[in-house]
Image 1 (cartoon, one colour):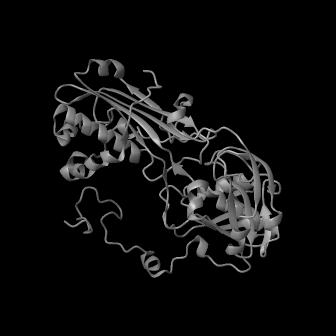
Image 2: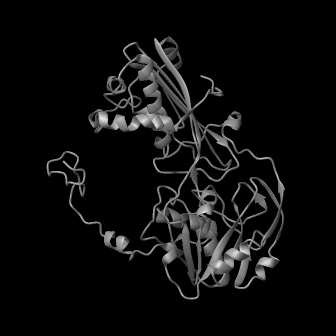
Image 3: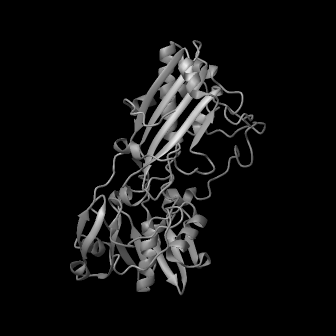
Length: 432
């Protein structure tokens, strides 16, 4: 059967609309250019904003001179921490305050916002904002700061750590042992549609055409940030030109546009440049992952351990849950998974497509491949021998599970992924 063929009516997994030959209702609009994205929305008398980013990693703004920018043709306002309104605070899931003070916590942090009659005027004036900094020592590299790692709060009801049986004892007595460490790099979104917002006010009601994946959540974040009732906020986002987690949360473009539009009583439009997206929005943290596997001589797992380090701003609790899938994927009576979060002075790390699993599965499957080589065992056979009959940690049956049924084709695709991870010696800052 071809991949694009509809599933038969008796297929066990066909539920609801799955398997039905339905047309995508927005397909024609998208392929013919009729779909309007946030920055394409039109409004009379609109102004354009451009974000000025911090050029240091950490420190304090000693002075900020906006006079040259304000004299540039077309410029109507330059916002800084000196004239921006007070805002609500919280982590990036609760609020997104901007221009709240002279402290610089990360490279690329918005430190000024230029609003002008055209995008070109705003961009030209942005380069004339003269900022002097007092630099501070920052922590930027994950590997160099593992000693500061802490146990993060649970993420989406998932605890940071899990333990079943006697992992240390089972590993020590296992006839075959593997202890490997992988590192994965920072990853950033680069979706086709940039983060963009058109903000306008109707009395005390805020209307935002914005690129956002979760509008109800976005309403609450904006309400908390701007200190206005949530019912006074309307977010409109009929189309998303790629999100993948990068547009789950409210970013600086929405808050800055809303503040400026209220201040000037005119609509304000802003789009982050491709370069700004890498600093002003969220990204996936780099990781350091240690996999320890112990088996009998037939390759059946006796002990499986997965330790993960990731980094984030000190104010954040989001960690890359790279060991979460290890809790369920393969059998083994003795298990240990742990996540540690390293405070770093870098842009916020948050959800990115397949959060946790994307980099975690790569490390786990690379380790399984190396284990197969050590056992002189076919890598598919190794996985078949360790197929669990139930959730190996919760001891409840799976509603469905088709890993083995995917066959050799999947493993032939997965095998080259081992080349994408970097191996090196593990500093072992965790004690068992």
